[in-house]
Amino acid sequence: MRNNDLIATAVCAQYTPEQLHKLAAHYYTADEIASAAAKIIVEPGEDGTAPDPVEIAEETLCAALFHTFDGWKSPRNGGLSVKRGEKAAIRCKLWKYKDSPKPEDLPADADPLTRAAAEQGGGDYYMTTAYLFGRWQVEKREPKKPTEKRFKSLDDIRAYNKMLADQRKAAKAAAQQDKPQTEPATAEQPAPAPKQEAVPSVAALKQAERKAKREFMAVSEEDRPAQAKALAKWRDARQAVADAESAPKTAAPAPEAKPQAKAAPAASADSAPAYCEQTSFC
Image 1 (cartoon, rainbow, N blue to C red):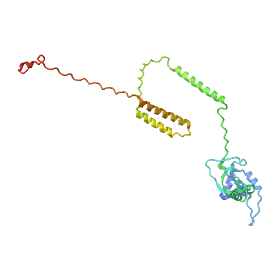
Image 2 (image 1 turned 45 degrees about the horizontal axis):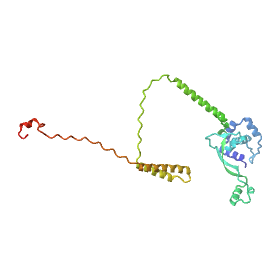
Image 3 (image 1 turned 90 degrees about the horizontal axis):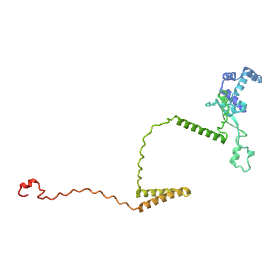
């Protein structure tokens, strides 16, 4: 059986004669159904009754309303596409063309496994599961138009950039004109005193030198530029440590002398208090 016969058998097994009659009446005119029935030659069976040619024509016409996903895309079927989210209405077995090479087309030095794979299937076609979609499940889609390039040449890009620059200049000039001509003078703030940077200690410099050494050792030998940069950083750190160690140590400032209390003057007869004159021991 050919694929068309297999599809017709699957459609008749899926739908009843009443459903097929409704499908045929929906998608075909009465003249088309009658014309198809007139071409069918029927012969009476053993019981002497002949099948209805109109019913056979409706089955044949309804079978043409079902195709696979790729079958609907064929130009002879209208080049239609299955709608998004639609599921197959019928699943059946159809013949599919085998793309693998024929045994006679294989090279003489083909391995046994390749030759055995080419020989199985019994011909150019093999039976496989196919999914059929109805006419109501497909639609005509317009091909996507190729998007036009925004710029066709380098001159167009330059002209576009110049236009943007002119727009920015015009906006800036308009903003300057909108500002008031005289602005109130603001009191000038005194410039902040420059902050005196703290000199790093020798311990901090040594720590930085060890860090630079580790960074130099971690650089790959193949990366020469990075290795030279890390080496220069390590040398600068070692030189900073050497300069800090060789610099003369500044003496700590002497503590301020606290004022000492003056000694009291020795007592004398002239400076003796008045009450001493009243006693005999003064």
